[in-house]
Amino acid sequence: MEATAAELKQREQEGKNDYVLLDVREDYERAEFNIGGIHVPLGQLSMSMDKLTPYREQEIIIYCRSGKRSAMAQELLRQSGFKRVRNLEGGMLAYQE
Image 1: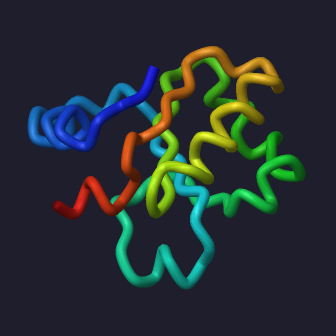
Image 2: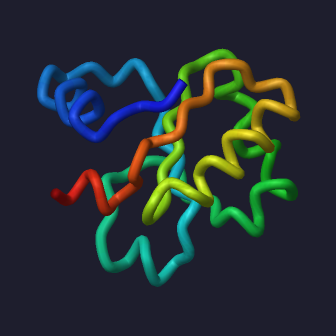
């Protein structure tokens, strides 16, 4: 199940911080614009699973520029036993609209 930019913005407005944001973009992309969260570029995700282990039971919303890399990250996390992972549909492009 994917998360939408509208849903995420609404949750932010309501102060609902019952989820973890995971940014899988590269450093330069994050420097240009980001909405916070944990930063682990997709290429480093497999080696950085221990960084995410404390959040295994929480809802994790993953984002990238357009939603493609975050969809790959979502699958990697699911294969590693994370059950509540959602991809931000359309990524930062949709979020910034």
